[in-house]
Image (cartoon, rainbow, N blue to C red; front, side, top):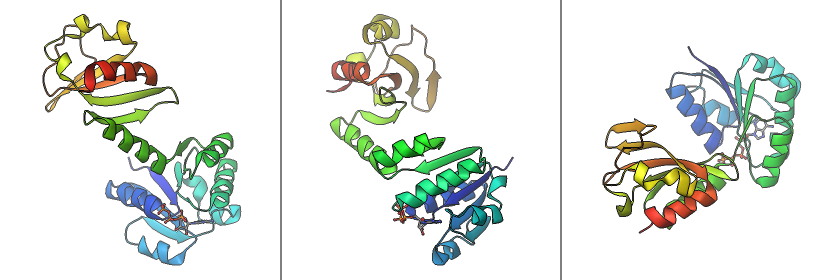
Length: 220
Ligand code: ATP
């Protein structure tokens, strides 16, 4: 079933979300205060409308209450982003995702009821830094300030060893939740699973525990 989305703010970030959702066949209402930006999305989104998202009446007039998930991608104008989020919360939107410009903005958005706050520049910078530390780190997702999921290439020291003898959970307090082996994905690998060359491990745990594990087994 098609889901209903609205993207408010059609800059590079909001525009990319709008394009991708539309490409995936979703119903997207594209909203911006700037006429030119709106015109650029007329042939991409299901509907593209000019509105000042800080104006509750304007949002009501475009039927925002009927939308399940609203993404606020107003970056530079922090005041407008906050006001828009407040209005959307008051209108009872089920799911609100907002792009934050800095940590202070992020804190406020969390306090006023944004369901998800994204911080793409910071997160991308961190990811890049992680991948610069070691070519073995493929990706990571922050779950909280303390925990993450990482995708790492198995280091040489792991080849030919099974999870039982490595005893990673007891020694490092982390869990190997999946192993990618070529096109195969071994989810919740058994203790007897032996790690092979070119395996990619998906690990969950605290930042400190993962770092200890990586230093020993992943970085070369
Ligand atoms: P980025 O490229 O990082 O996504 P940007 O610099 O292109 O951002 P921003 O200034 O962060 O753009 O704003 C994103 C969009 O939000 C712009 O197209 C702007 O016109 C729109 N916008 C700003 N204020 C409002 C508002 N009150 N209501 C609706 N749209 C707004």
